[in-house]
Length: 45
Image 1 (cartoon, rainbow, N blue to C red):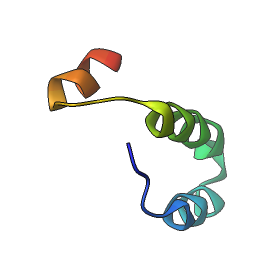
Image 2: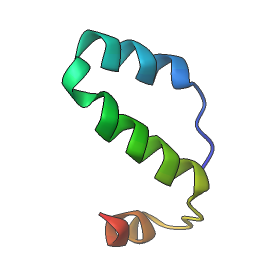
Image 3: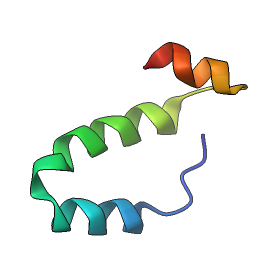
């Protein structure tokens, strides 16, 4: 998956400090994911 802008994620977790860790985890997983369909995404949740 191509993350267009990490800047938006950073701004969100600065405004909501409790979500920084889960967003960083999601970002790492999404960045390395090889999803081809929405079902691929759903199967990883």
